[in-house]
Length: 81
Image: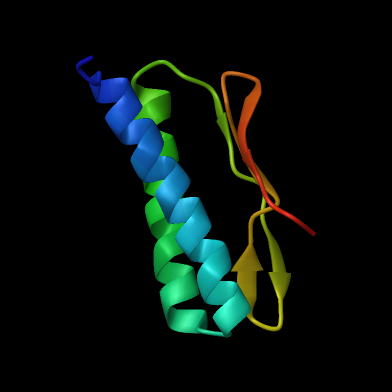
């Protein structure tokens, strides 16, 4: 089965969110912020394609943490607390 462009962008959105939280666990503030920026950019691309996205975030010791990401009202990834 061939992947659609939407599926490719969705995967990049998910990976960026995962890397954001992985960098937060490692205490790597610089990479954490860069990956959060990537995550929000992929969210914007999905919005430009007509999809609704949510990327809530909170700060912990200078690092940004994402509790979940959502596309079109459906959580596509939820992290442990």
